[in-house]
Length: 306
Length: 238
Image 1 (tube, helix red, strand yellow):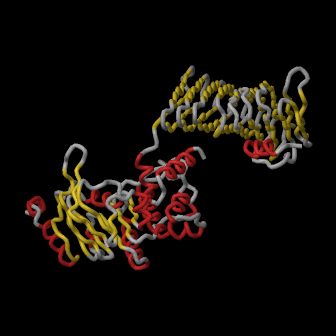
Image 2 (tube, rainbow over the protein chains, first blue to last red; image 1 turned 90 degrees about the horizontal axis):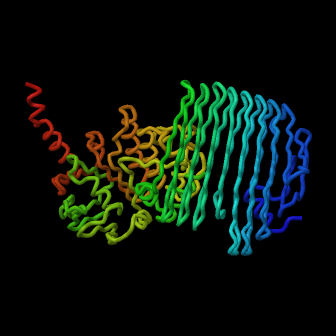
Image 3 (cartoon, rainbow over the protein chains, first blue to last red; image 1 turned 180 degrees about the vertical axis):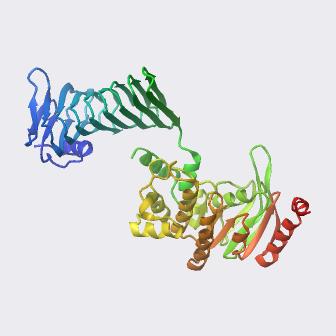
């Protein structure tokens, strides 16, 4: 049974009140709490290291699976390896997420290393939410690594969100795309207090007519620091777009380095980066509609990260 | 009723934009016109609280609102449609109209406000108010927000700017129906004769002062006469 804190974490990272229907794997405080296979999705616990292998049968359509991780024991540190084998012509949604509740003084850390093997023609939507809470002095640390290997004509949408309570995060995402493959990444981050968030994306556009969009929106408040680095390498006839859009507030610091590298004459690559405070005219407009300055600021930030 | 008592406004570098204006606006539909740079938009921003007067007082229905914030004035019933509407990444048309009306409005209510300004709600309610909307679309959404607020004083800063000719006819209709439907007062800053023509009174602001203020029937012929007397027009007609 999950306790109240664990249920709160589960709701925050997966939008679930109880263990989900269908295929799922729930990890709590460093061990596998429960798992369930479906007809098309099987989950196998790794024998040599912590983690699971997920096998999705070719042709599986309109199925979703959840793999939340919850940490409510202060000071726990873990590295987990999850490998996703997505069969050809699948159309599936995978919801991952990590919630940490740290009420002690030890540093809690979860490092999930997720590797996706997306077979030919498969479509996958991958959603990952990170959330931290706790009333102790211990820090909540999450360092996710995502490796994506995309076969011909496959399609992947990756949505990551880290909105609250994670003191330190270093996200590494590496992807290689074959002919006709498409990868869309949407990242949303809000940092506050003295938090630190670093994200690195490396996308190798190796196949002909493959494409990527790597889009990051972030808000840095208080004394927090953020660093966004992306490397989109066009190694064939391909298109790549990387964009970082950040709102900076208070005494925060934001670094954005969207890098594009063309190694082929038909590689079409675009990068954009914008960092700025909330525009005064946006605040004024909402204040003329009756909001206070603080309410206006909240609306602008929430909309930006929606 | 809105009252300016000897209101002046100077910029930080000491340029006097409004020079001791005193006037009362107690008609339901007043147009403010005058040459560019004459102080019209500054007057509107002084009313909305975006600028604070350097000296003088502003009263709304007898209450001194000079030192009230933008938010407090909004709560007192002042609405202000910007000349250059603001864009918001991630905030939808429906959300903005909801904020304006002070409650979470239904799709049919949003539809009503948007159709009044010539927009099909289905195409717009879930659109973000960002760079994907054209200047004309943003202007109409701006007017829809003021409609949704339904306050006792609505100020429009050059609502015709950026609106195409076809939409302009509808715009006149929007103001006509607003005038008929609501009990509030409308103040419009405009250069357009057809907008001035539907006002009860016209204020001419030039060089930071009131150059003329009176009934439309009195002011409009003078303005049009002044245009007819333009040296360039006369020379062009020779």
